Image 1 (cartoon, rainbow, N blue to C red):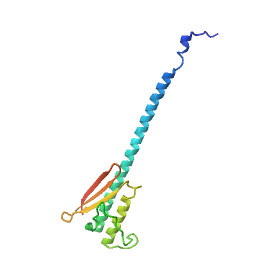
Image 2 (image 1 turned 90 degrees about the vertical axis):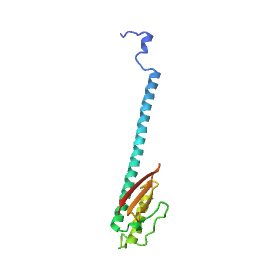
Image 3 (image 1 turned 120 degrees about the horizontal axis):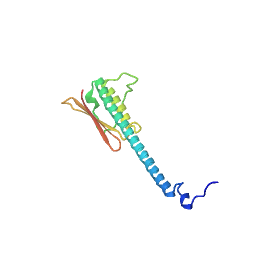
Length: 152
């Protein structure tokens, strides 16, 4: 037959409500910390993706300019409207000016596509005296700016 315990020893075998609440509070803090870290990791990942896309677009237009040998034809400012190509250079042969308009229109279309590069805008400045070309892309929130300066 089991022995009966005094009432003071009955409460030693379980947890009090305070201990349970403290444990739940510590668990909640751990979950919130993990969630915050996950959110920051996602933001950094998206920022890195946008950065990589902007760098690709910088290199893309420079390669197009080199292939076309028409550096001065590619000058465009941030606030200038995107050029409207008169010829579809994917389907027919274009001269240098038409190809430059086509390249700029395609480049600007990619930059201004919010799904590809958030808040993107691009500029190309070709120095006539120096022969240097500076391609600049602004994008993202908060705003970032990447530039590439090359000799054509």
